[in-house]
Image (cartoon, rainbow, N blue to C red; front, side):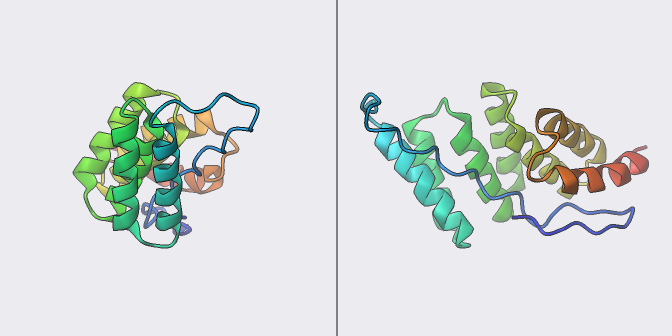
Length: 160
């Protein structure tokens, strides 16, 4: 979970993007059996999320890669992997994955949140503000909405 941002006008990005979302809940026994590869996808996402929360970011990234390989058309593991790569200071690759996730699902609020964090780290304030605004439009009362609302005014003031 990101650290609380400073309250100063020169607010900086949280030290880390939010932890990847939990893996989707297991289907009820009455639901159809998962398609081939579905279990490995779900398992990899869950293991990755657990490892990320424990601070084992590199190991989490390895699990997210397995989920991407199992379901390359899913935005969820791309966002999770992007968050992990950001933490590993692989900002360019993280940025690429966020854009890829948003091409698949342009309504992925967490992707916009992480994208804003990456842009803010790169001192691309205008891009960060745009990504954060999109996050707030999608999740105005989301888990990180308060933090984003506190960061946004400083980004908007600093734009030139």
